[in-house]
Image (cartoon, rainbow, N blue to C red; front, side, top):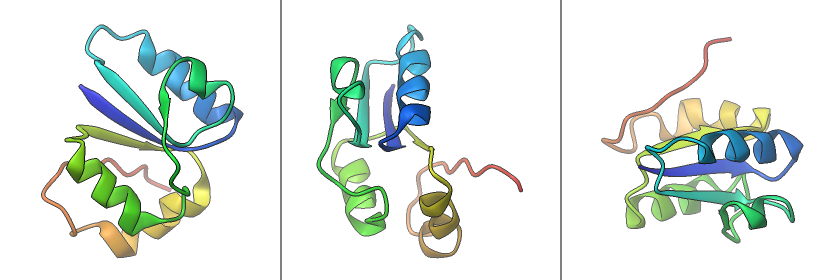
Length: 94
């Protein structure tokens, strides 16, 4: 499974660290990531709020699951990208 983790703080580092422990995970991308995530994932130079670029990256790299750490990108996803892709979407409930 390929996973894209959106965000670049300590929360995202913890998410990547835990996801990396799963035998189901083949590859983890982190956008934009940080110095810590660079050790355990592939950081990509895309802002956590650049939704069109994140979607393009996910499609081009056949990402199976996207995990959104920060609140701002999560709030932006609901109205903007909810129906933009046929990929499964996992949105947390408020």
